[in-house]
Each structure stands twice: as C-alpha cells, then as structure tokens.
Length: 269
Ligand code: DDQ
Ligand code: CA
Image (cartoon, rainbow, N blue to C red; front, side, top):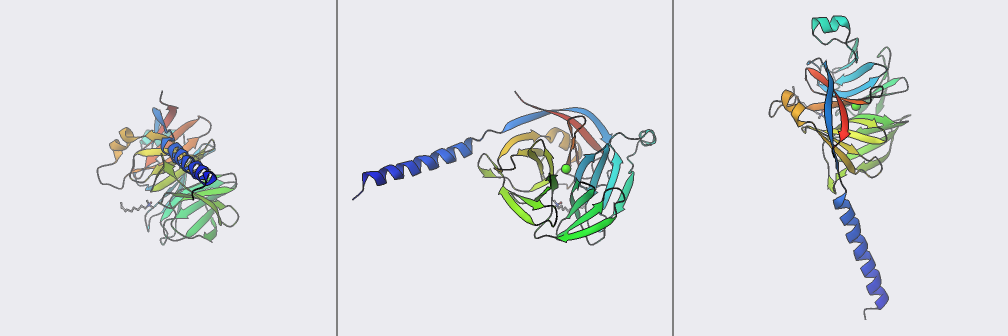
C-alpha cells in the first residue's frame, strides 16, 4: 500500500529537484560592455600565456617549446620605447627548453609559473627572475591566479583547482557552469574583487565566475577586438587578462598580438 506520508515525501523530493534545476537553468548572466581607454604596444613575438600587473609593471609568460619566456615591462612605456615605436622588455628570463610556459601569478615576492604538460610549477624570484624552486603537480597547467595564499589553476577542462601555496597540493576544485551547462577550455585567469575572470581558449570572450559555486555570473564579449588580431583558424587568440588596481581597468591582449588594450568595464543596462 502507498502510504500518505510516503506520497508527501516523494512530492517534496520532486518539487525540491525541480526547483533546484529550475534555479540552475535560470542563473542569470550579466553581460558587460567595455570602452577602450588606451592601448599599449605588445611585443608580437610573445605567445602570451600569463599576464598580470604589479607596481606599474606587466609580468608576462610566453609559451611554446624551446622559446618560453618570462618578461617584465612598464605599463606606461618609456619615451625611448614610444619613440622607436616598438615594444621592449625591461627584463626577460628564458625558460628551459623542455618546458612550455603557461599561467603566471605573483604572490608575495615570488612568481609562480605553470607548465603545460610537464607537471612542474616553477617558482622565480620576482626581482632577479632566478629560478628558486620546482614543485610537481598532476595534470595540465593552463591558467594561474591567486586569492590570498590560495593559488587557482585551470587545466583546459571545465574545472578550477585550488592549491595551497606552501607545496602546491590541491585542496579543492569546482566545476564551472553557465546556466547549468559546463564551460570547457578555461584558460588565463585573474582574480578581481572576489570573482575569477577567465578567458576561454579559442573564444573571444571572458567569463566571470563565482569561486564557490563555479557559476558563471558575467560575460564580456571581446569579438570586435579579437577579430582585429585573430585570423580564422589561427592560434593568435585572445589570451591574457590583467587587472590594473590603480586605474580600476582591465588590460587584455592575445598570443602574438601587437597591442594590449586597457578597458573600462561596465554592466549593460
Ligand atoms: N594551451 O596553451 C592552450 C594550453 C596550449 C596551446 C598550444 C598551442 C600550440 C600551437 C602551436 C602554434 C605555433 C604558432
Ligand atoms: Ca592574469
């Protein structure tokens, strides 16, 4: 016999599930718009992987086997650089040929650099760029940023991994979904005001992710800028997001792009 209480509990379970999936599917995505505040020359030799700003300087990692690099250059170009109309580096460090450099972040006085398939995290002195430590990890390395002492990594999938700083052990991970659907190929990252901003490989778009739920809360369409620099089918894709804390603007570039763009971001009405 079907008891009344059993019927009621089934009803509660069903409505609960329906409500839950309903909420997931309706999670609204805020669309952001941008205004180009300025541009800066970017060395088109750089196969941009990681990008960040600290104390008036860009720090950038450049990929590919046999030519990976770590570079630093001022956000405001020098007079000489402007005059010669070509981008220059203030400091550069060649990465060992066996590595394909990927995501980059700066925490305290160390630069943390991921490698694509080599399962090695390289830790450099921020001033001298001397390699100080190498730590192992499992899986691929794509994007890297941090929040406090927690390092945040992508691996080209729909997951974001949280690592503790001292030994790079994974402490947590979250799946990224947009209106309930997984978002794959997450690449370069930037932690801005409590949210994770990520660009997606081969897409001219940045998503804004809640680090706790993995839910995509915002989206920034950069196709107008990307089409200027990405020929169809090429690897010269949008990659590189850096937050300018002083100016409250977002800098973006791409692999082998000749420019960096400084953007003022606002939600669309
Ligand atoms: N990843 O950075 C997305 C993880 C890997 C990119 C690999 C692209 C290699 C293509 C080589 C093209 C040479 C210009
Ligand atoms: Ca970044």
